[in-house]
Length: 154
Image 1: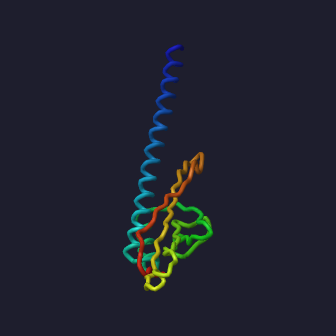
Image 2: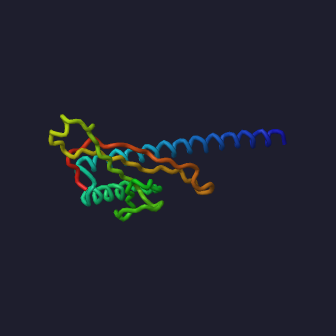
Image 3: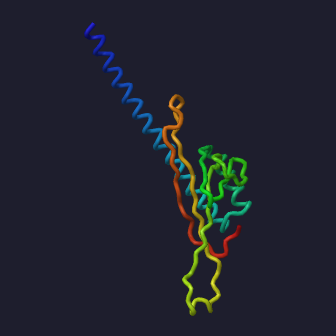
């Protein structure tokens, strides 16, 4: 009987370490996917020089191809885009976009110059770890910024 209890304890330890390792593997793969999605969204916005209908359509096509489905809630000053490509302010936004205009300090010398409209975009995508029994273990968002764009569209 002593051997059976020792074997069962060892089996439980192996199962716990196997669960921890597979959880870590799932976490690293999913977070890597979220970072790739964020980078590609930034590249698409920079390619289109802003967020317009063509950029949103290309982003939605990319998200469908990759199979990205993590959703979250955008802040009040952000525009969220859902799975169908329309602006969404609910918890069902796949990514959030905020246009941030760049202001130049006011002075007499600068006011005489004709300055272009300059802004950049702040992007947020979401990452969640859902387990079938425990549901959502944790969720966080990943943010990034585009380069400064002159005369952005949208």
